Every structure is written in C-alpha cells, then in structure tokens.
Image (cartoon, rainbow, N blue to C red; front, top):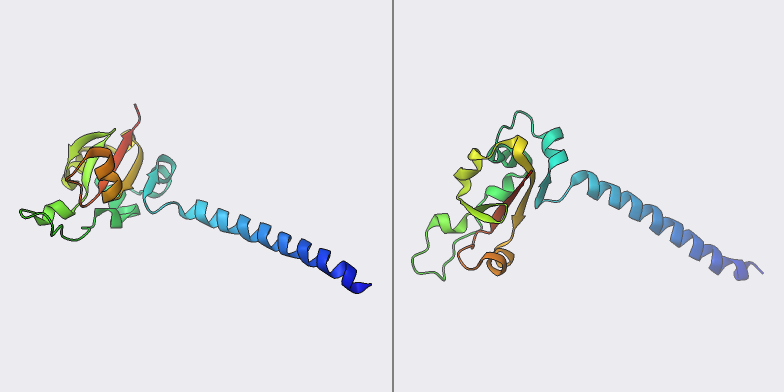
Length: 137
C-alpha cells in the first residue's frame, strides 16, 4: 500500500524542488544581469559618478573594453583591430576613446556584440567585436 503512494509523492516532491530552484536561479540571474548588456536602470543605480559611456563600462563591465586577441589572419592587422569598435544607434562611431563623448544621461543601453555577430551585422573589420550604445531618442 505504501508503494502505491510513494511514486506520486516523489513526483510532487521533484516538481516542487525544481520549481523553487528555477525561481531562485531566475531571481539570481535577473539581479546579476547579463555580462554583455548594461541597461538604463543599472546605469542609474550602480554607475556612481559616471558621466559618460566609457566610465559606465569601466565601472560595470570592464571586460567589454578588453582586447579579444590578435587577428593573425589579416596581414596588416594592428593591436587596435583586436579591440571592440563603437556603434551608436547602429551607426559606426569610432574606437573605444569615442565612448567618453557620450553623456551618461543620453544612454538607454550598452551592449557588447561578439565578433562573429558583429561581422554578420556590419561586415568585416570587427575582430574585437562591437560595443553598441543605444541612446534615448
């Protein structure tokens, strides 16, 4: 008789355990945020004294500013080619230093786009990926 109730009881216990584990994991993921995206709410709440996009990234996601290695397949490649390029509202804006020209109150989102996706989207010359800044229009 106990065996008859054991299987349904185990199924309920497993489902409850998975549901609560999933909720906890989802909450942790939301509070941590994506490593490739900085949203406006995070800029407002966590980027202390940041007045431009470069300072925001330096404080919140410094890994976005790092070189992605050399692009050895290109014969005239420079160290700068391995750094991310900057796009603002889908338009090429410049190198990493150009981020300092973007006022923090204008920014809705900052997103890092990996090299392969950047090449698909904007063509060749994005070996270091792209930092895409979306402004409040």
